Image 1: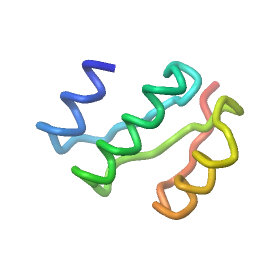
Image 2 (image 1 turned 90 degrees about the vertical axis):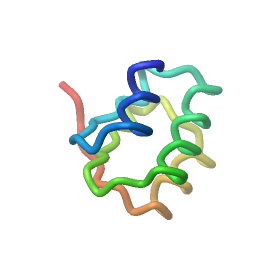
Image 3 (image 1 turned 90 degrees about the horizontal axis):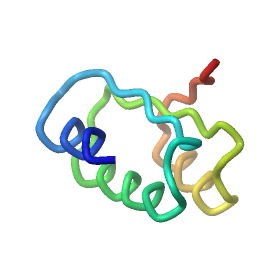
Length: 69
């Protein structure tokens, strides 16, 4: 999560976020960071690890959805 936080806050590079690798609390923190420092290069893999509320937030943010291998 530290690397993700640093990337979203300080860098403008492409980021793929896999929600399966984050705890529930980290998923919410990740969404807050994306809202605060929204970059056009963020894509998300829900990986079936998110709840309905997080899914609705991700749809509202209109972030590209990708699928990890």
